[in-house]
Structure formats: structure tokens, C-alpha cells
Length: 242
Ligand SMILES: Cc1ncc(COP(=O)(O)O)c(C=O)c1O
Image (cartoon, rainbow, N blue to C red):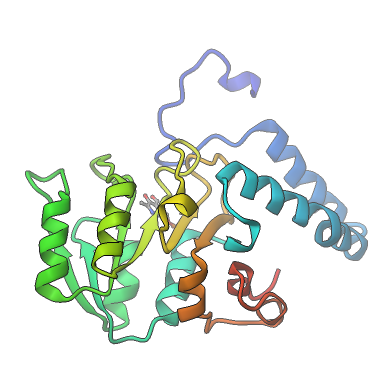
């Protein structure tokens, strides 16, 4: 840990996590090399480091590597997923969720239905189930841990409810990934997206997206590039380029 933060308790990881000295050094090393010998260094990145980081991350998150992709941030990934949808889905959102979850659906004219919290805090499965039935919901997009209240929705029961009603579930894990284990593959969650600058302590400009293969099969990417073609059928098809 940096000398300047030793003996201190840092309490604003929900705002932005503290990046470790080792990560800082690794980032500085690659960009220093990019300033003198970038093409060789970029090939080392592609051939050796990138595969290693993908493997390490998939082991840490306990998911198959094919189901994970790197993203620049949460809102970019949320938008590319929304662009891949058909457009006529009935979507359930939480009214006070982080705007980067709700705005892409609203902005793109989806049929949106809003959940209200109970006593300004909790979201019950009963309320969600009623909304599924009343509005014939196709997709729910929701924060795992709420950015304003800290309320944590239990993903196991939520995922089971979604399976029962054949509702696709997209989870924003920006306020939980790295702090709370998320057995996304085991629970059968369709999509998990997170920016990594909070509880993953990884700085700006990086995040992860997880896909269940059945979601990828139904919704292949529409924001594409050469890398999308090279990795068709896997989560990496959602990474158009470097
Ligand atoms: C719940 C939640 N999702 C996402 C984000 C960040 O999204 P982005 O990195 O796209 O700005 C935040 C940041 O405060 C957040 O609290």
C-alpha cells in the first residue's frame, strides 16, 4: 500500500476505489514502452499479457473465459447491449437506479415499466413478480447494490424468479464486483456489467461484461469490428477492437 494511505481508513470506494501501487506500475510500464517501441510492446500485450489477464480474471470471477469480455466502462457496455435488443421488449427498471442503467432504454424508446422501492429502500421479489405478470416483462435491468441507498438485491432468488417467468436479467455489479462474490454462471444470470474503478480498485477505462451463452445466441452484437468477427459466438464478440 502507498505510504500516504498507510494507517488510514479509506471510506469512499463507492465513489472511486484506491488503485494499488502494483497496478499503477504495470499501467505506467506499458505506456512508457508505448512511447518508445509501441508496436513490439503492443504485440507482447496481445500475445502474452492480454490472455493471461483474461485467464486470471475468469478464475477470480469463477466463470468460463468465453463468457467474459473487457469493456471501457459500464455505460458503454449497457448501451451496446441495449442496441443488440430487438427494440420491442417490455423492460422493467428500478426508478431510482443509476441513470446509466435506465437512460439507454428510455433514450431508445423501449417500453419501460418502473419499480418503486418500499419505504424508499427495499425492493421485494413480490413487487417484482407482480410487475412481471402485470406488464408481461421480457427484460429486467437492475443494480446489484444500489448506488444511493446501498440496498442489495439477492441475485439467487431474483435469477430463479426470472427463469420462472422467462425474463432476461441484466445486472449492474459496479457497486459490488470485487467486494461481494457473485456466482453469475452458477445462478444463470444473463448479463453482468461492471465498471472496475470502484470495488475492483482498477482505475478508469476498464470494466467487465459477462454473458450467458443463450443470451449471446439470441442477441449477437450490433456494435462490431474485426475482433467481433474473430470471436463470434463468445463474449469477446462484444469487443470491437483494442
Ligand atoms: C451503480 C453504478 N453503476 C455504474 C456506475 C458507473 O458507470 P460508468 O463507469 O459508466 O460511468 C456507477 C458510478 O457511480 C454506479 O454507482
